[in-house]
Amino acid sequence: MKTLGSCFCGTVEFSISGEIPEPLDCYCTNCSKLHGAAFATHTVVRTENFEWLKGFESVKSFESSKDNFRHFCGKCGSQLIVFNHNYPGITVVVYAALDSKNVPSVTAKLFTSRKPSWLNDKAVQYDESVTEEEWDRYVEKWHLS
Ligand SMILES: [Zn+2]
Ligand SMILES: [Zn+2]
Image (cartoon, rainbow, N blue to C red):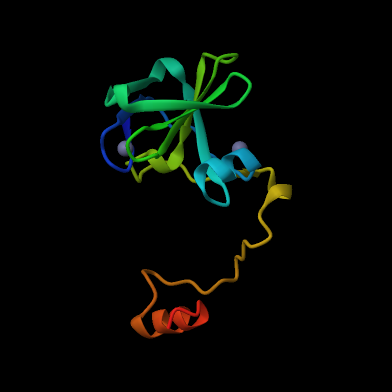
């Protein structure tokens, strides 16, 4: 079984063979800042099961903590994997980069003490974007009209 992953612009593609382990949400400050989001979802696979399929020459990396390299597409900026040189046998995979929807659900959340105060599980939910009417209300709120 192969699970495929890619960046937003499609330059970089990778595959993972074997089962995909259950992922974790990480609310640590590094994940939050680097992903531009409240948290990042990661799973961990054996490095021998991970393979770059194309676009590797466009992959850039950033050492976010000692020996820990965040790899991302140099064209579109999508975070792809995290590789720590002290643990070469494992590769942390950014879950949102996976293209297959048939993957396990999140089982745990890490560093929840660092959850941003602005997260609100009770926020109004829309299946798609807001209606035109609602959009006008937001524009008014943002003082753009
Ligand atoms: Zn890209
Ligand atoms: Zn983290």
